[in-house]
Image (cartoon, rainbow, N blue to C red; front, side, top):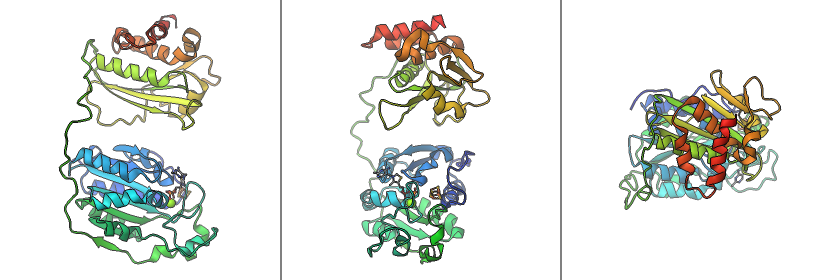
Length: 410
Ligand SMILES: Cc1ncc(C[n+]2csc(CCOP(=O)(O)OP(=O)(O)O)c2C)c(N)n1
Ligand code: SF4
Ligand SMILES: [Mg+2]
């Protein structure tokens, strides 16, 4: 295990003074103190303010649905099946109660991972509503209070079988408690108090939860599912792409393609990635688009690299291919000083960047692929024939070839 910085330099996305800031820092500090490097850690995040943490970690990250991240963590942990790697799940109190069953299951099976619950006693992201972990004192702040006691997540996890569960309120103890939890084989849960400066300040005097005694509960039992019964890997049936073209490219390049829903952005990115593989490069691809399918932006990232890709983050894209206003608005803040930026000349505020008529030569559906083709040719990263090979047997081969060839007119 190598000592590296797990906390990135990305600005904390929380309100000033939010407890999630110190909690996030404490987690990375504990991991670093224990000698974990960026490649040894998989961070799984939930929904909510506490779920905004992904860009803060220079490690693998995966973002789950509200309440479901412990289940994702279980999957990652079983897949890794490696004590030297660490799975950390971060969840708010809202998420912890919305998906409580997943916590109980991970505890019951004593899956090797650490769940950190950032408990600010409320739903921060949606405006301060109560959760199942809100105390009664806290509830009558502005909610119609009932007298139901909050869940004690620490003892619930313990009863269900977690190897280690603890509540910690004192910031001075965060480091030692997190280190103990992270080092515990099996399932550990740390409930860390976290002050929401936006919605709970007025209630500070009654915020008794911050002073309740810590609970520290241990079950002495072996890790669950240490030997995953692997019948067949999911990858067994996938055919490896054989290298058919050559690339002299020696480095790593990160390409962002940005456009609108329905504009073939994701498929252009996929084709670029496949062509890269045909040319013998390592590739990764990620897509991003709003939940409202069919409208708004569509953004994809492709990394092409001579060396294996261990970290798929792309903080400073080398190349940006922007074909619509939606795409421009979504990624303009990601343009780095050294990014090579190509924008469609129809984009209203397209700045000082290289303008190309992607839309004019290839139309709405072909513009992204035309932009990709243009960049392949200009950069000479590999022969354009690799891209033509990818679309060869596609059901829309003719129009895809047309979009690729349209790059000659740019
Ligand atoms: C299944 C589901 N229910 C509701 C929501 C709406 N929602 C988004 S964030 C949030 C509150 C998050 O609260 P918490 O988990 O405590 O995180 P915090 O913002 O306090 O860090 C809710 C209810 C959602 N995204 N998914
Ligand atoms: S709303 Fe509350 S929990 Fe969310 S970032 Fe702001 S202070 Fe933190
Ligand atoms: Mg919360």
